[in-house]
Image 1 (cartoon, rainbow, N blue to C red):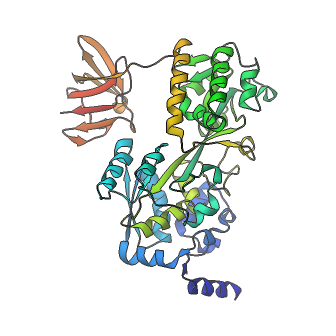
Image 2 (image 1 turned 90 degrees about the vertical axis):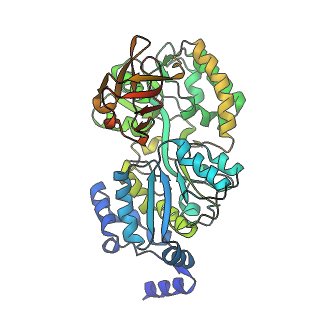
Image 3 (image 1 turned 45 degrees about the horizontal axis):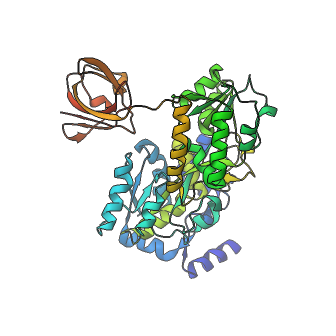
Length: 457
Protein backbone atom coordinates (compact mmCIF):
# COMPACT_ATOMS: atom_id res chain seq x y z
CA UNK A 1 0.00 0.00 0.00
CA UNK A 2 2.81 2.42 0.89
CA UNK A 3 4.52 1.50 -2.37
CA UNK A 4 1.38 2.30 -4.36
CA UNK A 5 0.98 5.60 -2.52
CA UNK A 6 4.57 6.55 -3.39
CA UNK A 7 4.03 5.77 -7.08
CA UNK A 8 0.81 7.75 -7.16
CA UNK A 9 2.50 10.73 -5.55
CA UNK A 10 5.39 10.49 -7.99
CA UNK A 11 3.13 10.50 -11.05
CA UNK A 12 1.13 13.38 -9.66
CA UNK A 13 4.35 15.35 -9.25
CA UNK A 14 5.17 14.92 -12.93
CA UNK A 15 7.88 12.31 -12.45
CA UNK A 16 8.22 9.29 -14.74
CA UNK A 17 9.52 5.96 -13.49
CA UNK A 18 11.01 2.99 -15.28
CA UNK A 19 9.85 -0.49 -14.19
CA UNK A 20 10.74 -1.33 -10.60
CA UNK A 21 13.97 -3.12 -9.75
CA UNK A 22 12.64 -6.13 -7.85
CA UNK A 23 14.46 -9.16 -9.26
CA UNK A 24 11.34 -10.57 -10.90
CA UNK A 25 10.44 -7.18 -12.40
CA UNK A 26 13.80 -6.50 -13.99
CA UNK A 27 13.99 -6.63 -17.80
CA UNK A 28 14.67 -10.17 -18.97
CA UNK A 29 17.92 -9.06 -20.57
CA UNK A 30 18.99 -7.49 -17.27
CA UNK A 31 18.33 -10.80 -15.55
CA UNK A 32 20.35 -12.54 -18.26
CA UNK A 33 23.19 -10.06 -17.70
CA UNK A 34 23.24 -10.60 -13.94
CA UNK A 35 23.31 -14.36 -14.45
CA UNK A 36 26.17 -14.13 -16.95
CA UNK A 37 28.19 -11.96 -14.56
CA UNK A 38 27.23 -14.09 -11.53
CA UNK A 39 25.80 -11.06 -9.75
CA UNK A 40 22.92 -10.97 -7.30
CA UNK A 41 20.01 -8.70 -8.17
CA UNK A 42 20.66 -6.84 -4.91
CA UNK A 43 23.54 -5.05 -6.64
CA UNK A 44 20.87 -3.03 -8.46
CA UNK A 45 19.35 -1.79 -5.22
CA UNK A 46 17.96 1.69 -5.75
CA UNK A 47 17.96 1.54 -9.54
CA UNK A 48 14.25 2.36 -9.74
CA UNK A 49 14.94 5.64 -7.96
CA UNK A 50 17.93 6.28 -10.22
CA UNK A 51 15.78 5.87 -13.31
CA UNK A 52 13.14 8.32 -12.12
CA UNK A 53 13.09 11.28 -14.53
CA UNK A 54 10.62 14.10 -15.24
CA UNK A 55 7.46 12.78 -16.86
CA UNK A 56 7.70 15.47 -19.55
CA UNK A 57 11.03 14.03 -20.72
CA UNK A 58 9.47 10.60 -21.26
CA UNK A 59 6.36 11.96 -22.95
CA UNK A 60 8.28 14.12 -25.42
CA UNK A 61 10.91 11.46 -26.10
CA UNK A 62 8.32 8.77 -26.83
CA UNK A 63 5.68 10.79 -28.65
CA UNK A 64 7.71 13.36 -30.59
CA UNK A 65 11.43 12.61 -30.73
CA UNK A 66 11.25 8.79 -30.80
CA UNK A 67 14.98 8.31 -31.48
CA UNK A 68 18.37 9.23 -29.98
CA UNK A 69 21.50 9.45 -32.12
CA UNK A 70 24.76 8.42 -30.45
CA UNK A 71 28.37 8.41 -31.72
CA UNK A 72 30.53 5.92 -29.81
CA UNK A 73 33.66 3.79 -30.15
CA UNK A 74 31.77 0.66 -29.11
CA UNK A 75 31.59 -2.35 -31.40
CA UNK A 76 28.11 -3.29 -32.67
CA UNK A 77 28.22 -6.68 -30.92
CA UNK A 78 28.98 -5.06 -27.57
CA UNK A 79 26.45 -2.29 -28.18
CA UNK A 80 23.69 -4.84 -28.80
CA UNK A 81 24.04 -6.18 -25.26
CA UNK A 82 23.36 -2.75 -23.83
CA UNK A 83 20.71 -1.86 -26.36
CA UNK A 84 18.68 -5.01 -25.65
CA UNK A 85 18.27 -3.88 -22.04
CA UNK A 86 17.41 -0.34 -23.13
CA UNK A 87 14.70 -1.55 -25.51
CA UNK A 88 12.97 -3.38 -22.67
CA UNK A 89 13.30 -0.42 -20.33
CA UNK A 90 12.27 2.28 -22.77
CA UNK A 91 10.09 0.98 -25.62
CA UNK A 92 9.32 3.69 -28.12
CA UNK A 93 12.73 5.41 -27.86
CA UNK A 94 15.04 3.93 -30.48
CA UNK A 95 18.80 4.30 -30.24
CA UNK A 96 20.60 5.09 -33.50
CA UNK A 97 24.12 3.93 -32.72
CA UNK A 98 27.13 4.71 -34.91
CA UNK A 99 30.56 3.21 -34.20
CA UNK A 100 32.90 6.06 -35.10
CA UNK A 101 36.52 5.24 -34.31
CA UNK A 102 38.43 8.16 -35.75
CA UNK A 103 38.54 11.21 -33.50
CA UNK A 104 38.02 13.55 -36.43
CA UNK A 105 34.82 11.84 -37.49
CA UNK A 106 33.60 11.17 -33.96
CA UNK A 107 33.73 14.67 -32.54
CA UNK A 108 35.40 17.16 -34.90
CA UNK A 109 32.81 16.76 -37.66
CA UNK A 110 29.79 16.93 -35.32
CA UNK A 111 31.28 20.02 -33.69
CA UNK A 112 31.87 21.67 -37.06
CA UNK A 113 28.28 20.87 -38.04
CA UNK A 114 26.99 22.38 -34.80
CA UNK A 115 28.83 25.61 -35.54
CA UNK A 116 26.98 25.69 -38.87
CA UNK A 117 23.62 25.13 -37.19
CA UNK A 118 23.39 21.43 -38.07
CA UNK A 119 23.29 18.28 -35.94
CA UNK A 120 24.89 14.97 -36.91
CA UNK A 121 24.24 13.36 -33.54
CA UNK A 122 22.70 14.06 -30.14
CA UNK A 123 25.43 12.47 -28.02
CA UNK A 124 29.18 12.10 -28.51
CA UNK A 125 31.14 9.55 -26.48
CA UNK A 126 34.88 9.00 -26.15
CA UNK A 127 35.88 12.67 -26.05
CA UNK A 128 39.53 11.81 -25.33
CA UNK A 129 40.23 14.88 -23.20
CA UNK A 130 38.79 17.28 -25.77
CA UNK A 131 35.84 18.64 -23.81
CA UNK A 132 37.45 22.08 -24.01
CA UNK A 133 36.73 22.22 -27.76
CA UNK A 134 33.01 22.00 -27.06
CA UNK A 135 33.28 24.44 -24.18
CA UNK A 136 34.90 27.01 -26.43
CA UNK A 137 32.02 26.62 -28.89
CA UNK A 138 29.33 26.61 -26.18
CA UNK A 139 28.18 23.38 -27.80
CA UNK A 140 27.22 21.11 -24.91
CA UNK A 141 24.14 21.00 -22.71
CA UNK A 142 24.74 21.12 -18.95
CA UNK A 143 24.18 17.70 -17.41
CA UNK A 144 23.42 19.13 -13.98
CA UNK A 145 19.72 18.30 -14.39
CA UNK A 146 20.33 14.58 -14.94
CA UNK A 147 19.61 12.61 -11.73
CA UNK A 148 22.36 9.99 -11.94
CA UNK A 149 24.94 12.56 -12.96
CA UNK A 150 24.24 14.32 -9.67
CA UNK A 151 24.04 11.20 -7.49
CA UNK A 152 26.29 8.53 -9.01
CA UNK A 153 29.22 10.22 -10.77
CA UNK A 154 32.21 11.02 -8.50
CA UNK A 155 32.68 14.76 -8.02
CA UNK A 156 36.40 14.45 -8.75
CA UNK A 157 35.64 13.44 -12.34
CA UNK A 158 33.17 16.25 -13.08
CA UNK A 159 33.85 19.31 -15.20
CA UNK A 160 33.26 22.55 -13.31
CA UNK A 161 30.56 23.57 -15.79
CA UNK A 162 29.01 20.07 -15.92
CA UNK A 163 29.05 19.81 -19.71
CA UNK A 164 30.49 16.28 -19.82
CA UNK A 165 30.10 13.10 -17.80
CA UNK A 166 32.59 10.34 -17.07
CA UNK A 167 31.29 7.01 -18.33
CA UNK A 168 34.08 4.54 -17.70
CA UNK A 169 37.22 4.51 -15.63
CA UNK A 170 40.78 3.27 -15.94
CA UNK A 171 43.50 3.22 -13.30
CA UNK A 172 46.94 3.87 -14.81
CA UNK A 173 49.46 2.98 -12.13
CA UNK A 174 52.40 0.58 -12.05
CA UNK A 175 52.78 -3.15 -12.65
CA UNK A 176 55.44 -5.23 -10.96
CA UNK A 177 56.93 -8.71 -11.05
CA UNK A 178 55.60 -10.53 -7.99
CA UNK A 179 58.67 -12.80 -7.84
CA UNK A 180 61.10 -9.90 -7.75
CA UNK A 181 59.23 -7.26 -5.77
CA UNK A 182 57.89 -7.52 -2.23
CA UNK A 183 54.72 -5.64 -1.37
CA UNK A 184 56.71 -3.79 1.26
CA UNK A 185 58.92 -2.45 -1.55
CA UNK A 186 56.04 -0.71 -3.30
CA UNK A 187 55.92 3.09 -2.97
CA UNK A 188 53.01 4.59 -1.06
CA UNK A 189 53.22 7.83 -3.02
CA UNK A 190 54.69 8.85 -6.37
CA UNK A 191 57.28 10.88 -4.48
CA UNK A 192 58.33 7.72 -2.64
CA UNK A 193 59.03 6.11 -6.01
CA UNK A 194 61.62 8.68 -7.08
CA UNK A 195 63.04 9.36 -3.61
CA UNK A 196 63.99 5.70 -3.13
CA UNK A 197 66.68 3.70 -4.93
CA UNK A 198 64.61 0.50 -4.91
CA UNK A 199 63.59 0.86 -8.55
CA UNK A 200 66.74 2.60 -9.75
CA UNK A 201 69.42 1.23 -12.04
CA UNK A 202 67.30 0.01 -14.98
CA UNK A 203 64.84 -1.84 -12.74
CA UNK A 204 61.98 0.39 -13.84
CA UNK A 205 60.53 0.18 -17.36
CA UNK A 206 58.84 3.27 -18.75
CA UNK A 207 56.69 3.55 -21.86
CA UNK A 208 56.45 6.73 -23.89
CA UNK A 209 52.88 7.50 -22.85
CA UNK A 210 53.15 10.43 -20.40
CA UNK A 211 49.62 11.59 -21.19
CA UNK A 212 48.27 8.31 -19.82
CA UNK A 213 49.45 9.04 -16.30
CA UNK A 214 51.93 11.88 -15.77
CA UNK A 215 49.53 14.45 -17.20
CA UNK A 216 47.06 13.72 -14.40
CA UNK A 217 49.74 14.06 -11.73
CA UNK A 218 51.15 17.20 -13.34
CA UNK A 219 47.72 18.83 -13.28
CA UNK A 220 47.01 17.70 -9.72
CA UNK A 221 50.33 18.87 -8.27
CA UNK A 222 51.42 21.70 -10.56
CA UNK A 223 54.27 22.47 -12.96
CA UNK A 224 57.02 22.75 -10.33
CA UNK A 225 56.23 19.34 -8.90
CA UNK A 226 55.87 17.85 -12.38
CA UNK A 227 59.27 19.05 -13.54
CA UNK A 228 60.97 17.97 -10.31
CA UNK A 229 59.35 14.52 -10.31
CA UNK A 230 60.09 13.89 -13.99
CA UNK A 231 63.73 14.92 -13.59
CA UNK A 232 64.21 12.67 -10.57
CA UNK A 233 62.60 9.76 -12.37
CA UNK A 234 64.49 10.12 -15.66
CA UNK A 235 67.90 11.17 -14.35
CA UNK A 236 67.87 9.77 -10.83
CA UNK A 237 66.36 6.33 -11.35
CA UNK A 238 67.83 5.89 -14.85
CA UNK A 239 64.96 3.67 -16.05
CA UNK A 240 64.75 1.61 -19.20
CA UNK A 241 62.98 3.76 -21.78
CA UNK A 242 61.07 1.21 -23.83
CA UNK A 243 59.61 1.50 -27.31
CA UNK A 244 57.07 -1.29 -26.75
CA UNK A 245 53.37 -0.58 -26.39
CA UNK A 246 51.60 -0.81 -23.06
CA UNK A 247 50.71 -4.49 -23.50
CA UNK A 248 54.30 -5.21 -24.47
CA UNK A 249 55.53 -3.61 -21.24
CA UNK A 250 53.46 -6.06 -19.22
CA UNK A 251 55.06 -9.01 -21.00
CA UNK A 252 58.51 -7.60 -20.22
CA UNK A 253 57.59 -7.39 -16.53
CA UNK A 254 56.40 -11.00 -16.57
CA UNK A 255 59.66 -12.08 -18.23
CA UNK A 256 61.70 -10.24 -15.59
CA UNK A 257 63.24 -7.69 -17.97
CA UNK A 258 62.52 -5.19 -15.21
CA UNK A 259 61.04 -5.21 -11.73
CA UNK A 260 58.22 -2.79 -12.51
CA UNK A 261 56.68 -0.79 -15.35
CA UNK A 262 54.88 2.54 -15.78
CA UNK A 263 52.22 3.16 -16.92
CA UNK A 264 50.13 0.02 -16.55
CA UNK A 265 46.34 -0.18 -16.62
CA UNK A 266 44.71 -2.31 -13.94
CA UNK A 267 42.21 -3.85 -16.33
CA UNK A 268 45.07 -5.10 -18.53
CA UNK A 269 47.16 -6.48 -15.68
CA UNK A 270 44.27 -8.35 -14.05
CA UNK A 271 43.68 -11.01 -16.75
CA UNK A 272 47.40 -11.84 -16.86
CA UNK A 273 47.56 -12.11 -13.06
CA UNK A 274 44.46 -14.31 -12.95
CA UNK A 275 46.03 -16.69 -15.48
CA UNK A 276 48.95 -17.23 -13.11
CA UNK A 277 51.53 -14.82 -14.53
CA UNK A 278 53.91 -13.31 -11.93
CA UNK A 279 52.53 -9.79 -12.25
CA UNK A 280 50.67 -7.46 -9.92
CA UNK A 281 49.30 -3.94 -10.00
CA UNK A 282 49.90 -1.14 -7.50
CA UNK A 283 48.66 2.44 -7.27
CA UNK A 284 50.75 5.02 -5.44
CA UNK A 285 48.86 8.04 -4.12
CA UNK A 286 47.30 10.00 -5.72
CA UNK A 287 45.75 7.31 -7.88
CA UNK A 288 45.91 8.17 -11.56
CA UNK A 289 42.36 7.83 -12.82
CA UNK A 290 41.53 8.51 -16.45
CA UNK A 291 37.95 8.56 -17.60
CA UNK A 292 36.16 8.43 -20.91
CA UNK A 293 33.55 11.16 -21.23
CA UNK A 294 30.38 11.92 -23.15
CA UNK A 295 28.51 15.10 -23.94
CA UNK A 296 25.04 16.05 -25.17
CA UNK A 297 24.74 18.76 -27.79
CA UNK A 298 22.93 21.90 -26.70
CA UNK A 299 19.37 22.02 -28.08
CA UNK A 300 19.90 18.66 -29.77
CA UNK A 301 16.93 17.46 -31.87
CA UNK A 302 16.29 14.60 -29.45
CA UNK A 303 17.38 16.31 -26.24
CA UNK A 304 14.82 14.64 -23.95
CA UNK A 305 15.62 11.14 -25.17
CA UNK A 306 19.33 11.95 -24.94
CA UNK A 307 19.00 12.98 -21.29
CA UNK A 308 16.98 9.86 -20.48
CA UNK A 309 19.64 7.67 -22.11
CA UNK A 310 22.50 9.40 -20.28
CA UNK A 311 20.60 9.02 -17.01
CA UNK A 312 20.17 5.29 -17.69
CA UNK A 313 23.77 4.83 -18.85
CA UNK A 314 25.11 6.40 -15.65
CA UNK A 315 22.77 4.32 -13.48
CA UNK A 316 23.79 1.03 -11.90
CA UNK A 317 22.00 -0.89 -14.64
CA UNK A 318 23.63 1.09 -17.46
CA UNK A 319 27.10 0.92 -15.96
CA UNK A 320 26.88 -2.82 -15.35
CA UNK A 321 25.55 -3.24 -18.90
CA UNK A 322 28.63 -1.45 -20.21
CA UNK A 323 30.86 -3.74 -18.13
CA UNK A 324 28.99 -6.74 -19.51
CA UNK A 325 29.45 -5.44 -23.04
CA UNK A 326 33.16 -4.60 -23.04
CA UNK A 327 34.55 -4.96 -19.50
CA UNK A 328 34.81 -1.19 -18.97
CA UNK A 329 35.30 -0.30 -15.30
CA UNK A 330 32.22 1.58 -14.02
CA UNK A 331 32.49 5.13 -12.71
CA UNK A 332 29.34 4.76 -10.59
CA UNK A 333 30.16 5.40 -6.93
CA UNK A 334 28.17 2.34 -5.89
CA UNK A 335 30.02 -0.04 -8.21
CA UNK A 336 33.59 0.21 -6.99
CA UNK A 337 33.88 -3.23 -5.40
CA UNK A 338 35.64 -6.45 -6.32
CA UNK A 339 32.93 -7.36 -8.82
CA UNK A 340 34.27 -4.73 -11.23
CA UNK A 341 37.71 -3.70 -9.92
CA UNK A 342 40.33 -6.42 -9.57
CA UNK A 343 42.17 -4.75 -6.68
CA UNK A 344 39.65 -2.37 -5.06
CA UNK A 345 41.77 -1.92 -1.93
CA UNK A 346 44.52 -0.31 -4.01
CA UNK A 347 42.26 2.59 -4.96
CA UNK A 348 39.49 2.74 -2.35
CA UNK A 349 39.61 5.84 -0.19
CA UNK A 350 42.68 7.25 -1.94
CA UNK A 351 42.90 10.68 -3.53
CA UNK A 352 42.46 10.65 -7.30
CA UNK A 353 44.46 12.51 -9.94
CA UNK A 354 42.19 13.23 -12.91
CA UNK A 355 42.24 15.41 -16.01
CA UNK A 356 41.24 18.99 -15.31
CA UNK A 357 39.77 21.68 -17.53
CA UNK A 358 43.28 22.84 -18.52
CA UNK A 359 44.61 19.42 -19.55
CA UNK A 360 45.11 20.45 -23.20
CA UNK A 361 47.41 23.32 -22.24
CA UNK A 362 49.12 21.24 -19.54
CA UNK A 363 49.88 18.46 -22.03
CA UNK A 364 51.78 20.94 -24.21
CA UNK A 365 53.99 22.02 -21.30
CA UNK A 366 54.47 18.39 -20.29
CA UNK A 367 55.55 17.37 -23.80
CA UNK A 368 58.10 20.20 -24.03
CA UNK A 369 59.70 19.02 -20.80
CA UNK A 370 59.30 15.27 -21.33
CA UNK A 371 60.54 14.88 -24.91
CA UNK A 372 64.12 16.17 -24.38
CA UNK A 373 64.52 13.94 -21.32
CA UNK A 374 63.14 10.97 -23.24
CA UNK A 375 65.47 11.53 -26.18
CA UNK A 376 68.42 12.33 -23.93
CA UNK A 377 67.92 9.06 -22.10
CA UNK A 378 67.97 7.07 -25.32
CA UNK A 379 64.22 6.74 -25.68
CA UNK A 380 62.85 5.69 -29.04
CA UNK A 381 60.81 8.14 -31.12
CA UNK A 382 59.09 6.55 -34.13
CA UNK A 383 59.69 8.22 -37.50
CA UNK A 384 57.05 10.59 -38.83
CA UNK A 385 54.46 9.13 -41.15
CA UNK A 386 54.93 9.56 -44.89
CA UNK A 387 52.62 8.78 -47.80
CA UNK A 388 53.62 6.20 -50.41
CA UNK A 389 51.80 4.58 -53.33
CA UNK A 390 52.57 0.86 -53.45
CA UNK A 391 51.31 -2.49 -54.69
CA UNK A 392 50.43 -4.96 -51.92
CA UNK A 393 52.77 -7.96 -52.15
CA UNK A 394 51.46 -9.77 -49.09
CA UNK A 395 48.52 -9.39 -46.70
CA UNK A 396 49.16 -11.38 -43.54
CA UNK A 397 47.33 -12.27 -40.33
CA UNK A 398 43.94 -11.32 -41.68
CA UNK A 399 45.16 -7.91 -42.78
CA UNK A 400 47.04 -7.03 -39.61
CA UNK A 401 50.23 -6.69 -41.66
CA UNK A 402 50.73 -5.56 -45.24
CA UNK A 403 53.99 -5.93 -47.20
CA UNK A 404 55.18 -3.87 -50.15
CA UNK A 405 58.25 -2.33 -51.81
CA UNK A 406 59.21 1.35 -51.55
CA UNK A 407 62.02 2.71 -53.74
CA UNK A 408 63.39 -0.78 -54.27
CA UNK A 409 63.35 -1.70 -50.56
CA UNK A 410 61.01 -4.16 -48.88
CA UNK A 411 58.87 -2.70 -46.12
CA UNK A 412 55.70 -3.42 -44.18
CA UNK A 413 53.06 -1.67 -42.10
CA UNK A 414 50.91 -2.65 -39.16
CA UNK A 415 47.16 -2.24 -39.61
CA UNK A 416 45.04 -1.45 -36.56
CA UNK A 417 41.40 -2.47 -36.58
CA UNK A 418 40.38 0.71 -34.74
CA UNK A 419 43.02 3.32 -35.60
CA UNK A 420 43.83 2.66 -39.26
CA UNK A 421 41.31 4.07 -41.72
CA UNK A 422 40.87 1.70 -44.68
CA UNK A 423 39.19 2.42 -48.00
CA UNK A 424 38.79 0.13 -51.01
CA UNK A 425 37.35 1.61 -54.18
CA UNK A 426 36.50 4.82 -52.38
CA UNK A 427 34.38 3.08 -49.74
CA UNK A 428 35.10 2.32 -46.09
CA UNK A 429 36.52 -1.18 -45.74
CA UNK A 430 37.94 -3.67 -43.27
CA UNK A 431 41.34 -5.34 -43.05
CA UNK A 432 40.06 -8.52 -44.68
CA UNK A 433 39.06 -6.53 -47.78
CA UNK A 434 42.69 -5.78 -48.71
CA UNK A 435 44.06 -8.19 -51.32
CA UNK A 436 47.46 -8.93 -52.82
CA UNK A 437 47.98 -6.97 -56.03
CA UNK A 438 45.94 -3.94 -55.00
CA UNK A 439 47.52 -0.54 -55.58
CA UNK A 440 47.22 1.47 -52.39
CA UNK A 441 48.16 4.82 -50.98
CA UNK A 442 49.56 4.18 -47.49
CA UNK A 443 50.36 6.74 -44.81
CA UNK A 444 52.69 5.12 -42.27
CA UNK A 445 56.03 5.51 -40.43
CA UNK A 446 58.67 3.72 -42.50
CA UNK A 447 60.17 0.59 -41.02
CA UNK A 448 57.04 -1.29 -40.05
CA UNK A 449 55.07 1.42 -38.29
CA UNK A 450 51.32 1.51 -37.88
CA UNK A 451 49.44 2.88 -40.87
CA UNK A 452 47.33 5.99 -40.38
CA UNK A 453 45.29 5.19 -43.45
CA UNK A 454 45.27 2.83 -46.44
CA UNK A 455 43.38 3.78 -49.60
CA UNK A 456 43.28 1.07 -52.26
CA UNK A 457 41.87 1.15 -55.79
